[in-house]
Length: 497
Ligand SMILES: Nc1ncnc2c1ncn2[C@@H]1O[C@H](COP(=O)(O)OP(=O)(O)OP(=O)(O)O)[C@@H](O)[C@H]1O
Image (tube, rainbow, N blue to C red; front, side):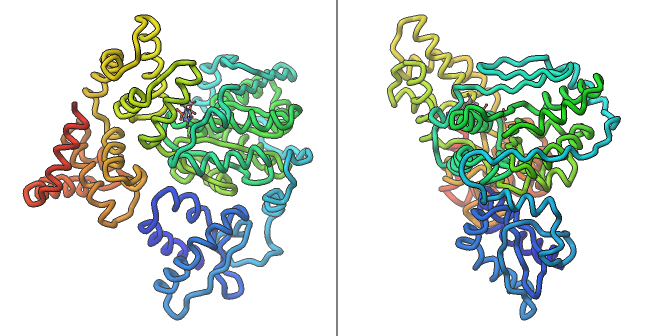
């Protein structure tokens, strides 16, 4: 069975590559056995070429190790496996897959010609859950924005907002977001044609929304007639519930299927909202079939979203899935310099470095800290120096010091050992990752009030016995290894002073 072989192979590869590489390039591949070959379907040509160049040899080796003399040769194609468990020929691929395939990588730059997809039949009276009704009641009729295009159809208002300040120019590139930025740029240059859908995921305040708006703004800059709809997923839910209540679901469908690009932020809020998921699924298919672009952000990898339909999660993997990671120190400094420049404030690199060292959680918090420092400097007419910053951020830093979070511990440990936070959470068992992971777990036990199972959960869903083992190991190592003892003391100082 291709799934079985591929699943085993993935388990091996997961330990060998950093989580971001694994999730971006290997996890979206779909296996199929065809004429003695294990065909791996990549969602687009870019992924196929990359996997061919970088991973195919290793994939073949692993398959050989697993299957011995019976190992099939591996071949790569663009598309998706026709039916997960059965080998199938080209001809059995679904119409949707064919359309998707045609829309991938084939269109010329610019917007694809509008091919309005037929509105699939959905259950117009489908049940709306209590949660969905709750969202409809709580989402205000209009959110703040700089530019809006409000369409009134029947009695339902559809709003799309783009923040004009969120552009590629104002987005600072660093190692942590390089791939996400490059993919976003390509989508903006060739909407509906390069990666569709584009799925951006990562922790809070790391720039996913910024990138999404940057794509929307760029599409509109290149084609002022382009219809770009940006909305948070709650707005989609609220609009849908309202449309159902007003008997205007056909207008709702027509509106969302008429856009050139649909940008949905924080898709994780669709969890448990079954009717919305269904509606979105159909909208999603119609847009992909029409060659229109879909961009989605989420706080986690698609397969890890709970309470979401499998078929929807699997659709997310059709295009390109890219992670945005927490920025490393240099990028945090560059972001601060850029934000200061935008605010017309002179910030020395020494001052930027000082703030970046203190605030490591996410870019939103970094921005907040800078705003506070700038406001204080304006108010008092002072120069922005490290002592002035320390004084301005006194309360914020005190709060940080009191609340050592696991997030903070993971970032600090990853930065110290020059690995990625995602490595700490991954299943990789190489020494370079295992020891830092044990250190981070032991520090979490020492410095937070979280229980062993909670700590295990926060480290990629590990068992509490693994955490206990890590704590014992670090105590032992502090006795026997002066290097580890020094590391531990450094962490205690970094995290608590
Ligand atoms: N690389 C970057 N360069 C410049 N600004 C950035 C960068 N990354 C994030 N920001 C800024 O940080 C703030 C938070 O970013 P954003 O809202 O895009 O985060 P997010 O990942 O969507 O978070 P959430 O999941 O909470 O919605 C924004 O003001 C954004 O401009």
